[in-house]
Image 1 (cartoon, rainbow, N blue to C red):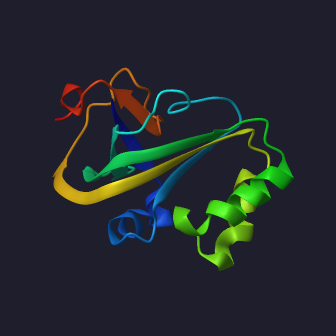
Image 2 (cartoon, rainbow, N blue to C red):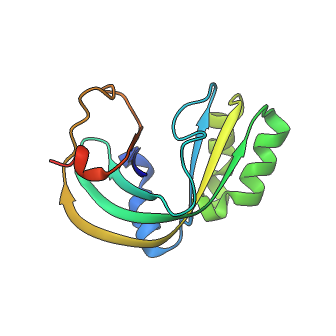
Length: 143
């Protein structure tokens, strides 16, 4: 499977992925959403900032899924995985405030991260606000 992870540009995470500072992509949800249950080792993830073309590709090395989260579990996850998720120690409290009431977390460990020739995607049918898209092959939505 191929996946497109759409990132908030203001969080400046794509450069951290490319540099290796960010080794995990995390997704936090109140209810289950993609990629929950649909991503596995060996899948490819294409990363893009919202409103921009795809610019980075990575391979999934490992996936961890956590459910029934509470504030203590969120704190523990941020403590254990925040650094590899590209979160600076000084920003952990800010991210805790964002995620403290989430019930689900998917941690996607990536490797073989590389820049790719930028390309657009067609999000028709996936919802204009989709932050994650899963397809059998990226060429189905590549523009």
